[in-house]
Structures are given as C-alpha cells and as structure tokens.
Length: 281
Length: 186
Image: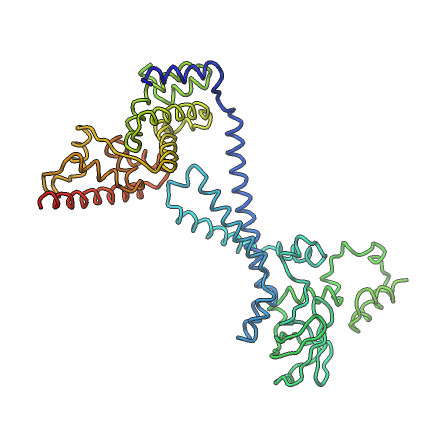
C-alpha cells in the first residue's frame, strides 16, 4: 500500500461513516470519573487513617503491649485488621488512579506516591482533633453493622481486658467493661493488693466469653483509654455520655423529686434503666 | 494549509471539517512509518499499524488536549501500537540509512570512544539487540530528533528518566561496539 492508498483508505472509512469520532462526552465522563474516583479514594484513605489513629489512641489495643510478650495476643486479638486492610487497599487504589492521570508521569511515581501518603497521613492526623472518631464509635456501639466491622469495640476479648473494678474478692475481680460485667480470676497473680474498687485496670490473660484467668494486671489511667471509658459509662450509667436523642421524650421532663431520686439511684451504681423505672412516675 | 499548526488543524476537524484529516495523515504518514521501521521489520505490518494508528487517532480526537502538542500524542499512540505488536510477535529489527548512521555516530560520539572501524551493520545489530527500554528513547532522540520533553510525553516518563535511559543506552552502544571492534581486530 503506498502513501496515497493509505490516505484514501482511511478517508474513505471516515467519509462513509465506518470510522466515527467518539463522543466528547465519553472523554468528559472518563475524566470526571477518574477524578471523582481518585478524590473519593483519597478522602476515604484520610478517613480510614484517622479511624486507625483514633482506635489505636483511644482504645486498649496498644496498651496491651506494655505487658511485653504477655500482651502480644491481646494486642493481636484487639487489632483493627479490617480497618488497616481497607486503608492499604484504598492507598493502593489511589496510587493506581494517580498513575492514570495526565500529569503523573512528569514526576517519578515514587515521589508522588510518597507525597500522597504523607498528605493522607497529615490530614488523617489533623482529623483526630475533631470528634469524627467518636461519631463512628457511637455508631459502632449503637450496633451499626457496617461501622462495627471496622471498629471492633463491642467484642469480648479472650486475651485482654480493661475496665473499672466493680467488686474485689479474694481470688477474683468483677470488672465493668464496655461489653458488660466480667468476672476475672486473679488467683496466683502478684501485686493485686493495690487494686481497689472503682479503679481502672488493664489485664492480660487467657479465657473465653465467660471465664478469664489473669496472668498480669495493672492499674491504668482511664484517660489513656477514653473509648473504653465511654463504653463503660454508656453501659453502666454515666448519663452525660449517653446520646440524649435516644431517650424517650417523657424521660426528659423530670420534676425535682424525680431528679433527686435518679441522682441518688445513679450514686448507688445502678444503671439508667433501673433508675428510670424506679423514679419516673 | 501548511501554515496551520497541527493543533489548529485538529480544532478545525472537530468543528466539522472532516476532510482536513487528510492533512494530518499527509504530515505524519512518513514520520510515523520511519519511526515504526526502527522496531518492526515487515513493511506490510508497518502499514497495517499505521492504518490502526490513524483510525485510533481520528476516533479519539476529542480526547486530545488541544493545549498540548499533537505530535507527542500521535507518537504516543504509534508507540503503544508498536509495543503491542512487539509483545505479540517478539521480533524487531533496526534499519539505518546512511544519514542516520552518521547521526548516531556524531551525536553519540562513538567514533571518539572506540576505534574508527565500526560498520553500519554493527550499529544496526547493537540497536537490534538493545533492550526496548533503552531503544525507544534512543530512537526518538537520535533518529526522530525529539526533545526530552516530547520523549517524556510520548513514553510517559519523567524527563530525568529519559535522560538517564538515553545516557545508559548510549554507553551500552559504545561498550558493545568496542567489543565488536576488538573482535574485528583479532
């Protein structure tokens, strides 16, 4: 085929309509779709990184490592795997979408990827100064399944426990945890003489949903695990932490006698349900 | 017609003057054919690929960013087609004309580095055997007279990488030619 033949052949196909221009909207949609997907994956990466930071900072997960080798199982058990896996997948997706952009090849991909990850981490870190994490925590505690899967806050743990001492016996402690009351065996454990009622403790050991044998235990500061603390308050009645929206309207209209009764009832460590039933006329 | 830039011609085509695409074919048929000849041996294959390239370019004209260089875009499409072809066929060859032989000889300063007994066939063989990663920028820079910026747009890699690949490719040509030269001397 000589030059003219090729030219005529192609022009023939164009003129006959055999070869047509693709609509400009196809390219526009492609560009918009790519841009939207990239923006969305970066924003979700920021959110997931924020939730990872929130979880590690506010729950008992990292604190188990302070027990050394005894705390490793508890740490692994309470680690937010799904959150981390989804975050990695989102970062990979963002990187892939970045390579598809028109400008990405101008700079080495390594630099761009590092820059993107650093920015995601910075913005994720900045978000920890908002109450976004707490909003997700509330959703998880309310039983929102899609959030619960990412934030394993409600599951009983077999290798670690953190909570407030509700009762101290000779060989046992009753602990208030976000999951409810748990009895833990302390037989043979050293240094539990310092532990008293109402103290915040963290312990590692082995057990199941019903039994827990302590290996190591220590007094902790509840400020180090605000999420656990909020979970306990929610379960055992610190009224301040409850989401007021979910109380029936009639419970919000107490008279002075009822208020005093409820306060006294709370002071006796009763839960909200018991107190409302007892005091509300 | 000659005074119109490629980008102006494309604008006119997109405004409805389909006939003007003939001008694009005229401007690039020889250039692309020359470029493809550095990777493919069969003239019929080259013509088939050219046909595919020009049709793809036409179909995707709305995807071309009018603020960028059209030549880089069309070379990019030709490059992709050549790479796809090479992946399927795993064959390729370089054929240099005398001007090109002189060009690479002068630009790469091979003569100064090695002995003066190089043969055109030797350079062809060295380029034939060269990894495509180095061959592509070498061909675009030495034979198509493209700038680093244009090569960066065609091969979709940073300008620095283009420079590095050209330098490594050039050194590899020199080394291999020196080896061949030593064999000739024995």
